[in-house]
Image 1: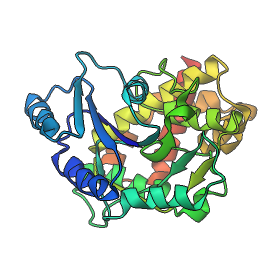
Image 2: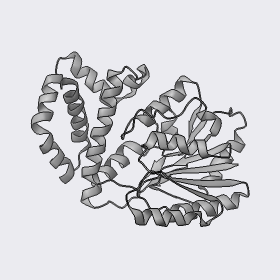
Image 3: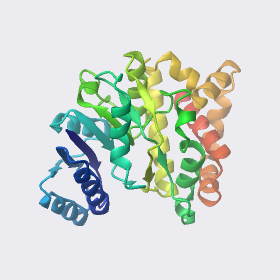
Image 4: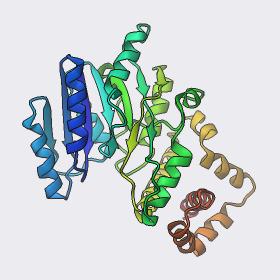
Length: 304
């Protein structure tokens, strides 16, 4: 009764799916693993992932054009045959052999859960420091994303990510990811606040997956700009929940500078110094510089 859903893009899923098959078969219940490739340009990776469907429980679906993360996740849910869902990103890594059973045990121990709920397992990074060209993403993840469940449950809908969740197909009825956001960033955040508005429980437990897909510093900075562009668009369209502005460190800083009339200075600083900041972040990653970079870019977009 379990559908494991994995959106795929240029990542060899052989090791991940092999471990998931072993764990799911041990549960002795009907299950499926659906891999949906979002038009990966690496044909060798495509071919390796296609071979995964040699296992009868695996379905591989190939998209001919890139959909983006939100639409691809919605498509995966539509393909699911079973009522319980595990959603994970393709760059995830299994931490231990109890990953799937831990979710099942939590549901079994909490019969009061309604038919619509989300359980978030969290994430972790491997302790070995990566090469310098990938250090920014690793440092950001270690400092900002890795938090125990007891801390995440204090503000369960804040900074939510579906990197690793257990939920139900019914949860997605009239409640999918916002497909208007086709580039990187904030479609996850919006979905979290949508859950809150609909009073769908979001519970955090300690059942992490490794986040193994470390972007290069260059790629992470590009994705950061894309995310800020999405954020600015949502601001312009007045689509951000009020709670999000209060919860977002970036927006609190932006509004503070706006009240002080300092946004033009921030915008000017981005225009004149962004290349220096990017070079600094690539050579010696600093989260303080990263925070300033994001604020200055948002100010720049607001003054264009």
